[in-house]
Image (cartoon, rainbow, N blue to C red; front, side, top):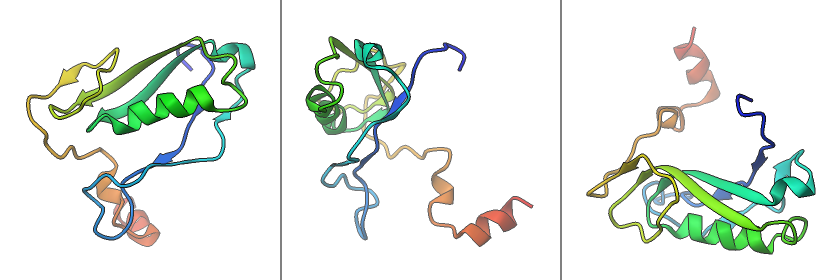
Length: 126
């Protein structure tokens, strides 16, 4: 809202399934991008992820975007940004404020809610 730029969302799932909570699994992309942006708005894309862990998600996301039917003919430039880049990441984001010299598990602000039921969340927030 602040920048007044069109936004599009890609849903990608990687860390899922029992025993996979701390391991990157196979990437699953949603069928479509969620956006009200017009075709011309996809000329220059800023792809943002919270973290470049191995680099796989960002690499595959760029590939997916460039091959996504409805927008592939309109994308001329893709830049990337993330908040953290781990040492073992093979991907070099265009913008990243924190480049780590090791590979810690990063606890996201909402992560403590992931194991709670809706009832537990409501109770905690009353």
